Length: 434
Image (cartoon, rainbow, N blue to C red; front, top):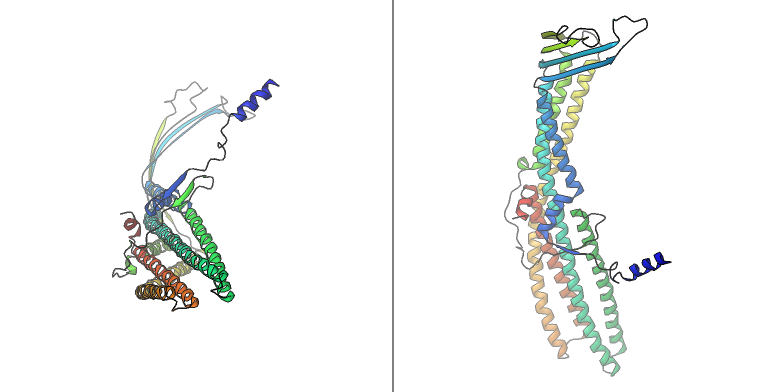
């Protein structure tokens, strides 16, 4: 009973909000989100590890060109029945330095391939760093646009609600008809539905941002994102050209072609005489335990310099077929790389065409918004003076809202296009972190 009493006292002494206190909130702007993603994104972490693997593979390939030192020591009991040795004890020591001076070019070719793979991994690392930045900034723009559209919906809903209250008073005073009252009431209901949908869209884009930057699944932190202000961004696309030869993906593809050719050459060499040149120096000693002999009594040193020539005269055509298969595989791989490069080139051209169109759409949306602002100001004055019907006012409110949506969507598209151009130039990451 005493133990139960202590447990109850401890439980009651815990503050009421100990378990219900809200999680710590953290605010992310665009730069902080990109930095966090580079450090925590699982996708980018895999790319970094792939780069580390290529660097280790290159060092291992280079090390195979250097001499190797091997030490072997065996000690124990080794016996047979009937015994063929004077003692069951077995002892052996061997120390040797070996060097393969030439192995038909295989080691050097593998070293070149490892070097090419490392260069390709470095390009992929840079490209992925820019790609992660593009994904985040694009989603940040989407999130910021949804925030802006929510503000527009809220503003429109407040205006319609205010007008509805006025109509309601006039209706109950007998000034407005029931048809006018019901039509305004339906506008309020539509506005409320649109407002709920806009809030849900904001929350979805927020969750997508958390996924992109790699928020820990077990994290209880409440993440808030600071939206990009569309009023302060530069709403223009600088003149730029996109050269496929300088594109990171194209350069990586060219390196892959070189590696494919080297792999095909390695297989082709087996059709020709294979030359191997190796040297070695070794020191050995054996049977120095349990035999009455010292370590130096059976010590031996030796060296070698061997040239080996290997050539297959007949193997039922296996090597010839392997060479043909390697040639076809090399062509297939190069065809895939060329297809991807053609697709990339076409995408770059379409991007430039879309950029010009988006620039024009932005100008038109800006002009439309200015006209609709003047229009709604005129309609509201005339409506207050009783010269304009409520239907004209509703249409004017819908038009100004639609114009604002088109304008801010055009701003978002313009910014996304600008950042996409920087991505294809390989400059996006540095540009965003300036």
